[in-house]
Length: 454
Image 1 (spheres, rainbow, N blue to C red):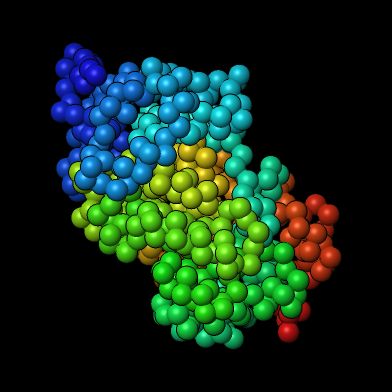
Image 2: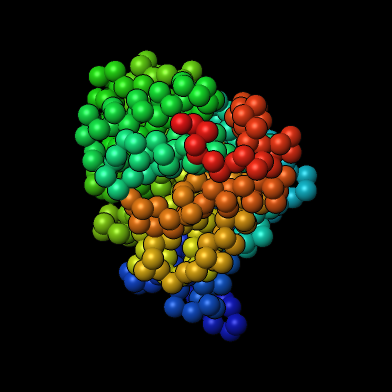
């Protein structure tokens, strides 16, 4: 493995694969703060050149985090499709990029080799791609998934109805849920982030969502985004749930901080498979974001983008129904401004789809980040063009419980009209039956009136 090159009359030598991966990454404040980023544009370009010549076998033979010391590395190795990997291991990262972008390569072709691609290899190829490359390659790939209903089908665009409430007031949650539904948000999931992570509270919110779904015959699924162990206990006590949620990280140390292990996720799948209300087969919901490992000093010396790819490698073991990326949620210490968040959004969406994940996106931001609404909307539109399965639906784009900015019900409707997309099929029929959408998927004059559910 050659880790040096000559560029503009200067030799650039890198210490390791970890070093070249970090320096090939587009500028991110998290890498800069930890002194892992390239110091100059020329050094970054040199790192990309070196990385483009490294083979997939080089990446496989030189793990960034030793499997004997890191559970994530270990389960990623165990899950890799070695039969497929053997056919592509001599490809360089540059050759993989060219193959992904070739007119002759279809989305089906990409998914056929997906299980033979390591998470680190997915990160490597994304690092040498431009924004248009990332959109073009991702747009080829369709990864539908089924819980109670199916999302991610070609021609559709779905939304999570996110009726969070600052005190978990059930009537407040219900009012927000009704408003979002009247705008067409909710075909991905009715999903609430609880303030209070207790079994009793989780059970009450799950059953509220379920009762609403049953009363109005809404074809969707429900979830409360408490810790996965809390959700399992709630389901075991009789809560009605369709899927279980958990945040993931790309290192064992960071997952220890989240209080989650690989075996726990298997246990969660078994629990919801046996006691849940949806047929599946996709029954888990994950959330990830660039920089989560660095923010708790659990990155193992690896750059934030590569660790994010490892999250997707871990997630695919469990064949999730949904995975949504919230890279802008942490703050400027990981992604400093709008440009970095736009780039991270496109990287994350591409890497996830390349690894066979049904990707949803939350191009979000906190109010102390150097970003404006235009940046957020640009990221949202580009990821939609790239084929994201779903987005969030938040009242006026401002989550009053989590205190961050995300996509609003109005953004959701605009994206569907702009791209000619409709909701998931069963939900689309429900919207038309209730005269909230027309045959083209556009909202009617009746839309936005939450009182129809009272």
